[in-house]
Length: 348
Image (cartoon, rainbow, N blue to C red; front, side, top):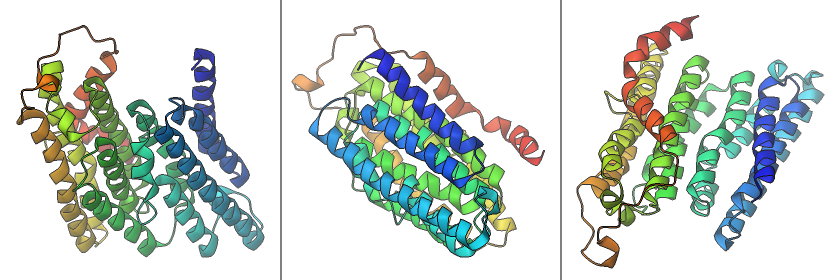
């Protein structure tokens, strides 16, 4: 792909998300989401592989359907309330439809079925964009409308954490595992969205950091399945030593950074007298922990059979930029100590 075309597509991605962030009108937010979708489609299909083209078509159909439902809900809200403002959506019917449409766009359960198949057809760089940047605009809309349907959000959040953990148990493809991981992580954010929006913002920032470190690690190791992780130690021994910590941070174990949002979310749910919900969410996190430990075991404690693929490759210099991965790995592992600072900033 031409660097000029790539720069134009990346600029369009930023423009679409910024329009959704800054807009207070439903049509402007809808246009931003559409620009976002149309800008990432060429990036998804740039390899001209049948699986990549199939993933791009599936993604387009799902996002177009979600955008159509979102536009319908915006028009319905304008009809019922005579207001086009995002923050002036007060009628429960359009708000419920908007919540479901944004859940479809985000890949939240039970509207998540498209995510594993789409992720599987993409390369890890495009998958990283899909798992991080593409989540920002729909989440910003959810934060702006502040859905009043507490049972619906709690159901979506719990279903996402449960299915995100359960679905990844029997997977061997890393991109599908990361898709289910994304669904589970978003479920935690949705659980606390109506009670503490600042916690949702903190959770998405921590998730973007840990997910970016995970995707870049797998890209550097050139691994797309669990079996390929077994020969990662021959390619980058230092990377194999750090990767388990990154994965356990994504799982939310202390003392890594990923523990911070889950700890604060469970605390907030308990304050809202939702102790059963907090307990179920903590139990579903154990399902996700299993497949993170499975990846860790495959990468550090197993050795590939001594055949041609498992022989020690030549230690050629890496042609990929490793500084971003190093910075993200440090942030993923060591920022739990900044929890009091994060609480202070959220209280402002």
